[in-house]
Length: 332
Length: 169
Image (cartoon, rainbow over all chains, first blue to last red; front, side, top):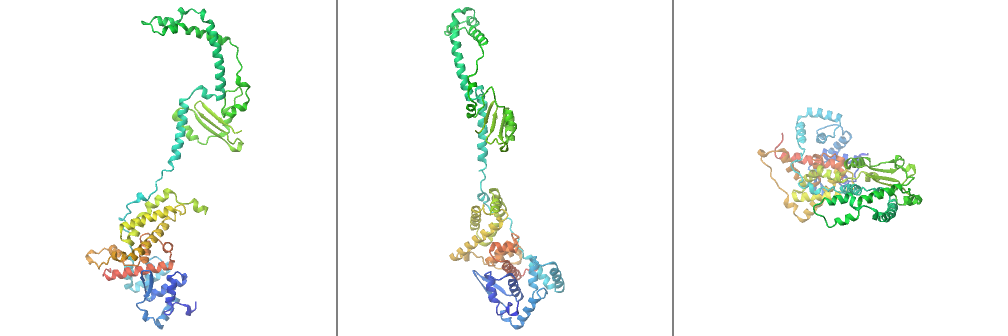
């Protein structure tokens, strides 16, 4: 930098304006700072506008200017002129090790500045920790959103468990198709048995039945006792059992149904060729094993859930077992 | 862009900033405004603004963002008060206290009230919060050299104030 471009008494206001507006680069800012500190200039902040207030502005003559240029070229030299700059830099922790040592040497020679340094070191504001913001709770955000998915999931599982406990019937284990076919078969058989039983009724000895003996021991007969006497239950049961034993084994109606019918219901009936759950589930993973294990332990029911591995080209398959309820879902 | 989204502040992190920095921001505002209710309003407004932007601010940058927001709100408040002529009336013109009541921090805080807003801000950020020059420059939208000068000037004024009341060691 040429001397003409250096900050001096004639041009420092221009640099100062650039500095306040943030247009001055770091090097020139440092130079301006050094200039200000060297000649004890004070910038007076008057609200929004900052103007220069120089107590010693009039003293800035050519001789001082020359001194300043010398300081600029030998900025590392600590003198009584720029000692304040180094003292403040020390308090702010901006001095490197070498400069710090040179400052100590200077201070040993000029003890008055050591007092100045001690004073500067005391000018550190300590926060008043007793001042606390009183309404922190109002500023915080409530964190309850994450509870709803957990509550919903728990409610679903609880519903499934209650369902499995209350409806643990043989007909649920079977498929809807099987239940329908079995109901039809039972209905036909039942009707046939009724007809045959009625045909055999006149040949029975009504007085020798166990039911009759029970009613005879009562002190007072009930008006409905006559109805029971008309239907000897023991004879009825014996007759039914005899017919069942002698009856040829019938072929289940659902054996002739195509397999697609059962799979379209997404359930597995007791077919003669029943798909093996074990063989299905061996290659399937349980992604919620801790949950199902915990629920099994709590409810004393076997609860299992398996999902097919996509890599095995069984996408969409899942298997759910809650107690005696077993559901296997197979896409296509 | 993706990285900033991934590290955006969560609800719990936001609440953590309340625990960590609300007191500091309140003290920072109170030192400027000298009015507890207005300082509380500043803190609440600061956190409201940060909550609106909490998806764009990382937890690591939250402190600087909070103080920057608070600083701008304080400046706006002071400008508005200056226009209304109210802040001038609230300024405390304290005389020099007798030496018997000497407490260095009390005297320093009195002297702090005599500093211009920008000098007070940089000194508070430096001494209260321990920010370095670069961080203060980021908060106050100044460059580092300006921050350095303002801090030096503020120290000089505080030192002169202490000398004035004959508290030199």
